[in-house]
Length: 199
Ligand SMILES: Cc1cc2nc3c(=O)[nH]c(=O)nc-3n(C[C@H](O)[C@H](O)[C@H](O)COP(=O)(O)O)c2cc1C
Image (cartoon, rainbow, N blue to C red; front, side, top):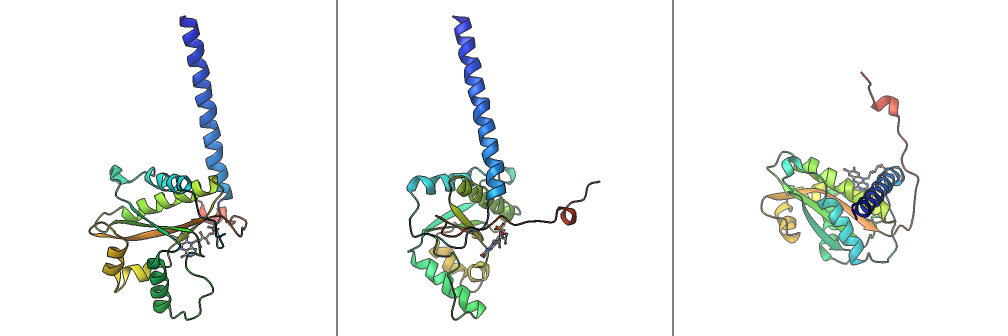
């Protein structure tokens, strides 16, 4: 009997190790393969896909485990996206944009955080990258979006904070678009020598 239980545990452990190895491989592959997507198909995301992306953001670490990041989820058809696009273009003097700021992606998520919390921006950055990597693993495209900063932090800050249902004293930190890739490009290259110092 004990022998059987032992054998069972041994098998369960080795399955777990195999799962963990598999997950680790997926993370490294997603990191290597991820690249910004600037062109999406019309097909919407399933509810499960959207949930998985949001949970990847929620699972990101936060300073002191404060879990302060708020996620506002918008579908492409949401009129606030159009208002944000118009405000961004007004501030930048753009009259004939070639595409909107989220490249017609079917889902846009706006991350906000408590404006008084020192680590809010960093926590949002970690969460958004978790979401981008999750999208890559799900075979979806993503684009991290900072170009709406002035629109969301300018004279209409309170209006947009209210429209996007930010919690009290929260402000925009970063956004991310998701959808099925209509275009693809190679991941960016980098100059490791310029960016690394070994001491
Ligand atoms: C904080 C941040 C803000 C960004 N904002 C925008 C943006 O507003 N529009 C855009 O097209 N790309 C934006 N990007 C994507 C970068 O341009 C892109 O990550 C970079 O060029 C490297 O390319 P890759 O993501 O394909 O590796 C942003 C990326 C980061 C990290």
